[in-house]
Amino acid sequence: MMTTNENSSTDTTEAPAGGSRFTELTQMVAAMASDFEKFYKDGNKAAGTRVRLAMQELKNFAQTIRVEVQTMKNGPEAAGKDGDSD
Image 1: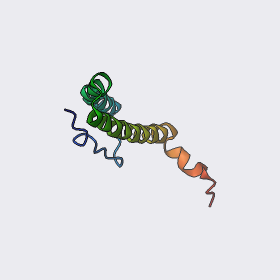
Image 2 (image 1 turned 120 degrees about the horizontal axis):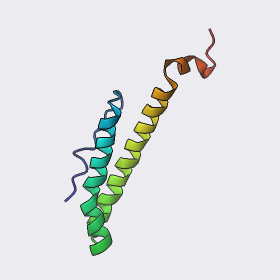
Image 3 (image 1 turned 90 degrees about the vertical axis):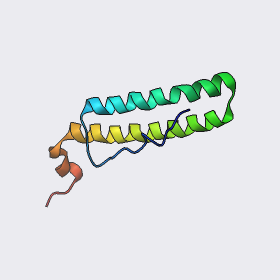
Image 4 (image 1 turned 180 degrees about the horizontal axis):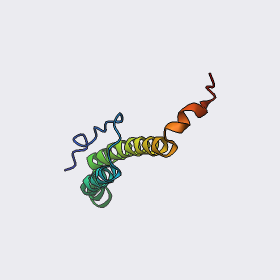
């Protein structure tokens, strides 16, 4: 059985190394495998609910990574480009 709430706490205030983010991502996807199988092969509706929850958590995690990547890509020089010219 998949336990999605154990690994769903992602701290968005700290940007860890890219390798650990990739590891988190692969762990999240791997944790969904059994519920995907239970839902799609066996028609288990409770597993479908867990799949939907896990997919929502994956979506939120993906958004966190997108923001981190954008911030790292733009770097500190992007801070003054918002039209704030004092």
